[in-house]
Length: 59
Image 1 (cartoon, rainbow, N blue to C red):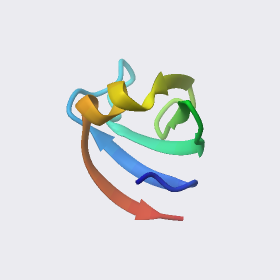
Image 2 (cartoon, rainbow, N blue to C red):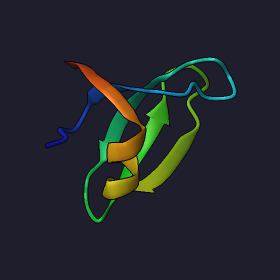
Image 3 (tube, rainbow, N blue to C red):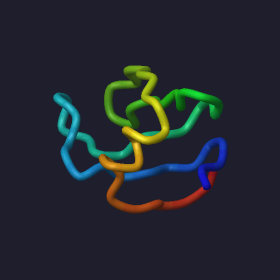
Image 4 (tube, rainbow, N blue to C red):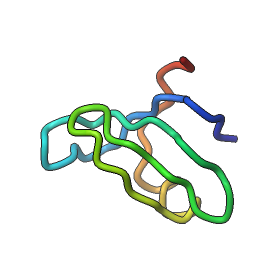
């Protein structure tokens, strides 16, 4: 479902104001990097499914 280096948008924006995230790692948890402030977080895939708005593009 998710691909590496894919840019996704979330329903709520991050504290920095950006709502776009880049996927860095896929596994049991998915590692995301904020496109605005470069903060890295990890979320379980079922939690990300709830927060995602749409897929933007692959780099």
